[in-house]
Image 1 (cartoon, rainbow, N blue to C red):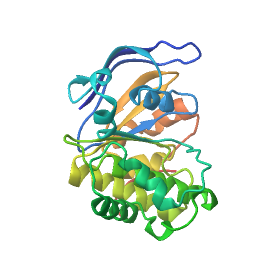
Image 2: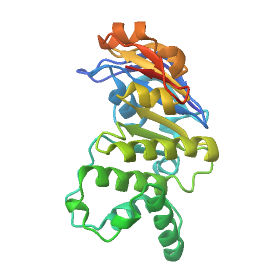
Image 3: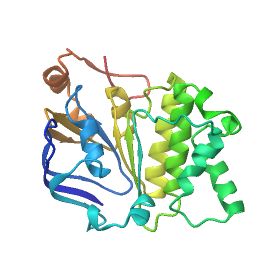
Image 4: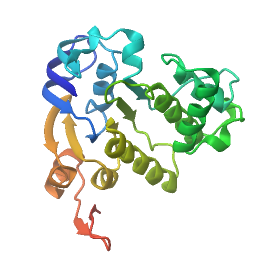
Length: 251
C-alpha cells in the first residue's frame, strides 16, 4: 500500500536514507528508535512536507501524482503538536476534517459525532478548543483525522506522531486499542511513532527500527525488540519477562 524505495532527503540539515520500506493495509506499524533517529522526519516525508529523491507510492501511485483533495481523503497526519489559536469549539475543529469530503450538513453532523465518539472526545464538543488540555486536544485532532479519511475509496493511511504523548494511562491504551481496531476491522494502514516499547509489543503488528536516519531492523515487535537490541540502540539493559496474561514485557 505505502512503499518507499531508495528514498533520500534533499534538504540539508536532515539525515534520512531508506533503501526499501513498506506499510500494508490492515497493519499497525510502529516506528521505533531513540531521539533523533529520523522517525518524525520519515512521517513528514510521507506527508509531503519534505522534498526527497527516490520512489514513494501509495496504492501503487506516486504520492506526487495524487491531487491534493484526493490525497487528503486517503492520507491524514496527527502531528506531535497542533497549533490552533482561533476560538473554535472542539466540534468545529473536528469539522475541519470535512474539507476534502462531499457531505451534506446533516451527514457531516452524524460523521462528526461518530468520529468524536470513536476518539473519546464527544463530551468536549461544545468546549473552546484553546482551553482544552494537551491530551484533549490530541484526541480532538485524532477525530479530525478520522473524519478526513471517512470517504477514502481505498484503504486509508493514518500517520501518528507520538499519539499517546499527552494522554493519561487509561486513555493511552484505549486510543491504541481503537487504532488497532481501525486496522483490523476497516483495513486502515497506521504508521505510528511510539516511544513506549511495551506499547509497540502489545499493539503493533509490525515495527521498524531507525537509527541515525537509516532503517536497521524490521519485523514483528516480538522479534525486533530483543533485550540485546534494546541495549544497543537505547542504551538500556532491558530484561524480557512474561506477564500474567502471557504477554512479553520489557522491564
